[in-house]
Image (tube, rainbow, N blue to C red):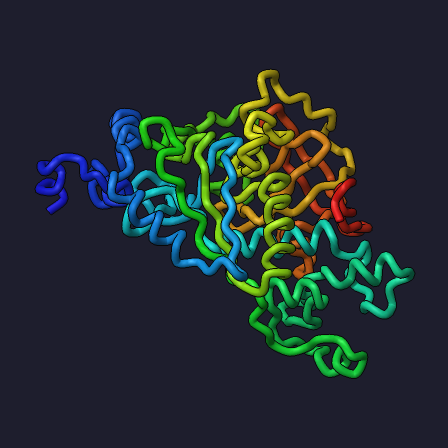
Length: 393
């Protein structure tokens, strides 16, 4: 059946061409010798001319009263859905009908949830809101996310987080209600719609480009951490497809006007500062306002013309941020913000289960190179939460 499909030529729908029409070999994967040419053909596929009509109808479906539409431009490449199953080993999330770039609303909501909690939450998240030491910390507790104890939800989020993003039931709901605070399950006031590609924003309406993911410690990942990272393991470059810089994406939010306005402001900050999708530690997934498209965020892949100088060495105790991205075996990854390097936490099982992506932790550097750093979680550590960026409100 697959050979019959190959005889029909490359389809115009990117998702079909990337998956169903992939020239797989006997092992069910695209052979390395064919991968480069195949990806080049996919990158040359233009968006269907009929997509512009569908995009216009989609924009017209939103109400001008409470819904908000805004465009951002990619300051770096975008890779969403890389963990999906694929004949190329690296998945790609695209629009089911039109095959154009898309950022799922669930990904945007998840990004904002981590960003609000990590950047605006209190310095000591273990304290109850009324136990915070001063007025500033009590105000920041309103942005705090869900508090976990082992695998149980001990406490729901603060009221601003709750209103924006919703909340589950929690063990301390009764205590929160006694204090006059919000508690119990709540769906949230804002709906996050999928962000769609703006037609015509890519050269010749071709939004995709061939890209490469390079695994530098294949032996370490294949052994589930049983073998240590080293400096003599051969790199393993894997050809993939990503969305090219300069592409415009249209974002849509629905809900009460005051809340969608606040959500848009926070989401713009999160997308510019953190990015969305995979490889954000390398600058991928950053989006900025069209009038600032020439000013790339710090850490963007396009800005790095010189080799990264880590400035840290094995044995150093450093502050790092836990990443949402995990290793292939499900272990933690973290980013050392001062150098911009990221890598695995080798003893991920020792990381407390209460920790979550966006948390700042103290780690010990196991090994470091110009491309990657490996960490170990110390047995005793004092963690601190990130403070709001200067100038943010």
